[in-house]
Amino acid sequence: MSQIGTRWGAPSACAITCTLLVVFTVGAPGAAAWAAEAAKMTVFAAASLTSALQEIGRLHQQQEQGSLRFSFAASSILARQIEHGAGADLFISADAAWMDYLAERGRIVAASRRTLTGNRLSW
Image (tube, rainbow, N blue to C red):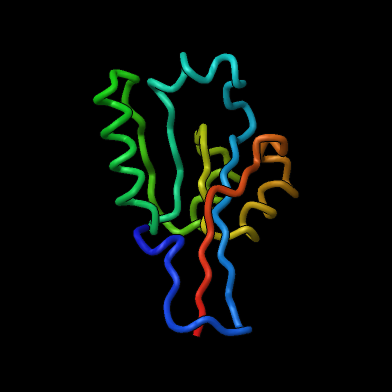
């Protein structure tokens, strides 16, 4: 997702803010166990993050921290898969509404929810 954090056009009063949120799904390892579990971590992420996360995965493996398994698709598709029991340790959504959808259904650990990054379009 090379366009995250990039601004297009001239500054104006009109701006669209887009946030990416990350959460651990229910049953994911706690912070203390995270390092041990990272070698077999499954990450569900918005398709727009494919390039960036694949690079992170390569670096993770080069540092001998294990390999991350990725599943990339639209946030809506991934959220519905998690809702129906798909095994994701980490969910990175490009749409806060789908993160809310999972939270309302008790499918995420609320304390693990974070805003990773965002961008603003100006014209």
